[in-house]
Image 1 (cartoon, rainbow, N blue to C red):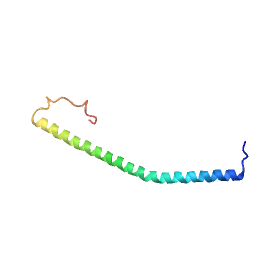
Image 2 (cartoon, rainbow, N blue to C red):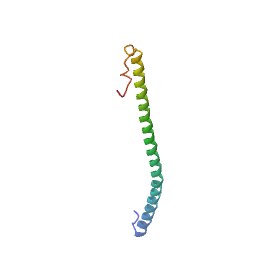
Image 3 (spheres, helix red, strand yellow):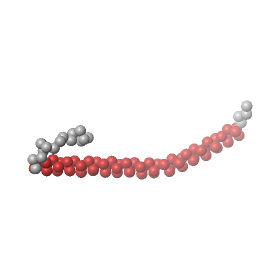
Image 4 (tube, helix red, strand yellow):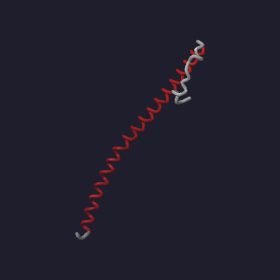
Amino acid sequence: MAEVTNELMFELMKRMHQEIGGLRLDIREVKPELSSMRGTIVSMQNDIHNIYGVLGRQDDRLDRIERRLDLRELAEPLSAYNPHP
């Protein structure tokens, strides 16, 4: 078995220091990418929220049209297809 010397320990510590330095650089590159992805996800969530709002308004308009034309009793209930009653 190889003898553990101060020189060997010093070389191992230098190698570890280099590896940790490389990891720090990688993390610095990943952080802005994660922030960008977070911004994209928030934007997509806002878009989906807006789409649900538009669909809700269209549904309300359709209900008013059906009531005015007395088609309400003929329309089939869509509660099974409506995820947000």
